Image 1 (cartoon, helix red, strand yellow):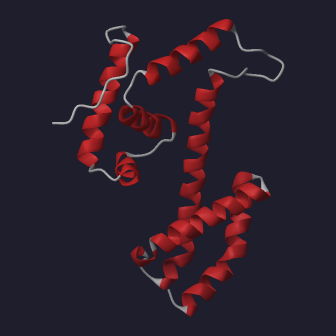
Image 2 (spheres, helix red, strand yellow):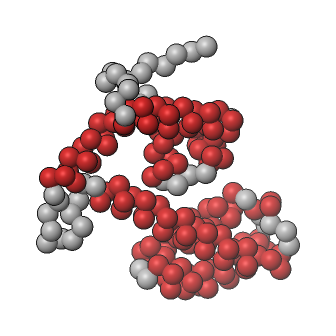
Image 3 (cartoon, one colour):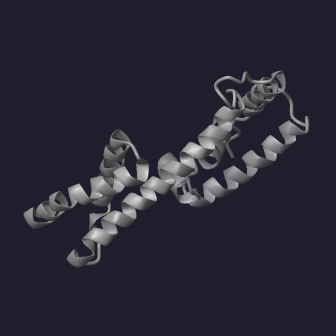
Length: 171
């Protein structure tokens, strides 16, 4: 990145902040969103096609970052909803607490590799490629391990698995 690119980025900051603030409705969240956008843009700087496309490219990154964050929050709220009351004045029912604890207990029965895969995909919303990059394993390994993790969780839910975490078997 040269000085011209740096100047172009600096010139875009007010517009990016304004867009982020309008999307998020919160100045602190907007600043976090702009920072995440710039980090991603700098990591992928060489994939940018032309200097004229800088503004739409940055706004597209910001918007995708915002949508990813919204999906992550929604997934997390679904998980937290099992443990927390739906409304501040409402306490969690005994059934909700029991279901939440049972879910955590079933997840604890999975090997940590399978548990991590399921959480990254189901709770954090990572794609298979993102999981592969995060864990440093091939995407085909992610797909096969995720399939085994889902099968094992189904078996645990149906009561067909012992209650000791499976040890890792190396071939």
